[in-house]
Image 1 (cartoon, rainbow, N blue to C red):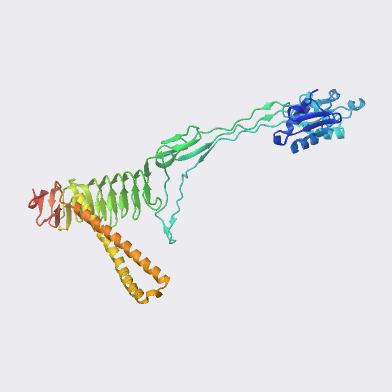
Image 2 (cartoon, rainbow, N blue to C red; image 1 turned 90 degrees about the horizontal axis):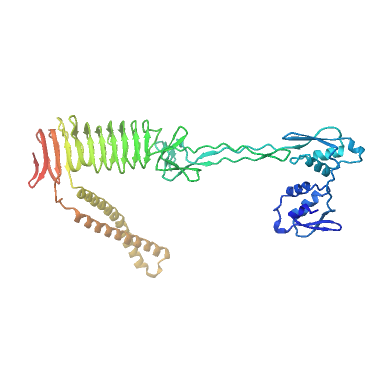
Length: 538
């Protein structure tokens, strides 16, 4: 008979018993229950289990004795042990007749007998040992239990972006609270992972006492919340934003909206908004708040003493703007307003279209259109780069209303000159006290000659270095002013004009490319252009 352990360890059968050896490098590579199963399959009834486990677990590489030569079960208990078997349980009864046959039940022979009778999993060895030692004959005792299969874990979706942002206001460095900085929506970028799926697990198999495997029920799968402008990764485990935008939950789906939709007012519930795409506001923009977009901004209601900025698109305020000298509107590509009143700044490189009226507002635009049959421009300062079309300019009260056509490049270069003048003045203010300190300190150093301390020398060096740095900056400012001034010339083509289809009232001041005309008498339907002799009115 071949030794059943030879498949797993080195075996040496000697005259005084069986020796086995486990190489150190194989330590931990063998499950001891596999050895037990091999022994019981070959019906060995005299192995020393504890000794075998000890030698294998230590793995010294030396041959060590595990007991006498193996004996095989002879079937002596087959006729004296009855079993009752169900899928998940087995019981046995040792008949008292075995004692009349001079047989003493022992664990290993009884286990071999049970395996012959089909019980191959979950044998309760303690129960078998107890039955053999107590010799409870003619009574059924549970001696094996099956294992129920373990259901697999259901798939799980982890959303990696917070859907409901924190609506608490932010604290400033000085300890005060900015109630306008409330985060009310979540922006995501193209390629950002929005959610990931942890796949279901297959579960663990169960076993009948007869050794048959019971297949497990796998966990339930689920789908990623694949909504608009999202894609699923190739391995089907991640949901990714296909475009940049605002994350929104629609039912059970996650979707990315390119337009940020604010269903109510922009107020303390929403907070300031800064968004790279388009913004659609169904309500008003309340005082003190700022709405800034990379794309278009559309406001259905009124903008009240607030800021609305479109860096690259248009601004549309369907109702209008009540500025009270504070509101600011900027739309690079164009602006459309229902009306505007006392707005601090309205600026666009495109068309400014005002449907009703413009009162006491400061405007810079390429083209101004306030030509509707009920529209008017009263008060304020208006600067256009190309032309203006206005129905009524000024009013019966002769309110001063200033409007001018300027060359865009010349205007911006003049603004640069003013900025450079301010910078030069600030540098000169810093330079003057340094110059006095250096002169004063130089006089002291001249008298002290060789008894100057290192501290005084270091202070003098610091002042001189700072003074020289300021001089370099002043030189740079002067050079830049010369360059900018050289670019300010009268435009070669002076095509700009101001067209008024209705009434023009006294108090209106019209300026076109530096030529100015004060309207002293009421007139109707005039177009103002510049000619060699000044402004002509036709």
